Amino acid sequence: NAGVTQTPKFRILKIGQSMTLQCTQDMNHNYMYWYRQDPGMGLKLIYYSVGAGITDKGEVPNGYNVSRSTTEDFPLRLELAAPSQTSVYFCASNFEQPLTRRTFFGQGTRLTVV
Amino acid sequence: GDSVTQMEGPVTLSEEAFLTINCTYTATGYPSLFWYVQYPGEGLQLLLKATKADDKGSNKGFEATYRKETTSFHLEKGSVQVSDSAVYFCALIQGAQKLVFGQGTRLTINP
Image (cartoon, rainbow over all chains, first blue to last red):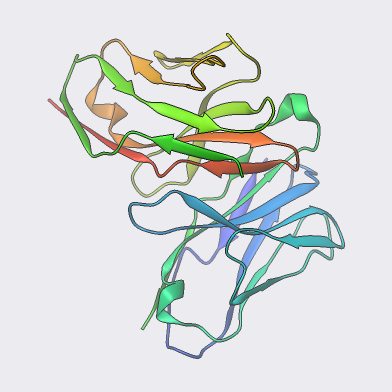
């Protein structure tokens, strides 16, 4: 059981480049999330999904896009990278049942935009 | 909206010292509360949780009690170890299953 898997672990982008951060989970979770973690700050929610085909904005969605074509995968797209997007990105997932509200996290992707 | 406030870090202690990391929350309903830990170079791991008032979550010697009257969920450990050095995040979840995090507290334990 791999849990939540993110790729890549590290990436350096030039301003204006685009990339996709991959996230997959094998726990059949309905809910999936993308967070960013800036130095000295808590995690901020970028986008989330409550199931395949359904996505919604979080606190800081500008500059990002997501899709959820399958239950397992929830990729995050950066179209025009900016230095402000330098951060560590975490994908997460959990069940929808309230009593099992444990959220599982991937190991993170450290992105630097130069 | 819902929010979580943690004591500012960094916190530096000697091994075997007593640890308290304060956490208070603001929420309209009755959230579930969590402490997550992030060891260097790793993702977040659930440390403990409490789902209703007066519940006590515990794990690895850490404890936190859900205090509705003071809207708090302070993390405590009686005797810390060097291996406890990490960043600790208090969080809540309510409604649409979205975790709301505090800013994190970096803990360093010196031998």
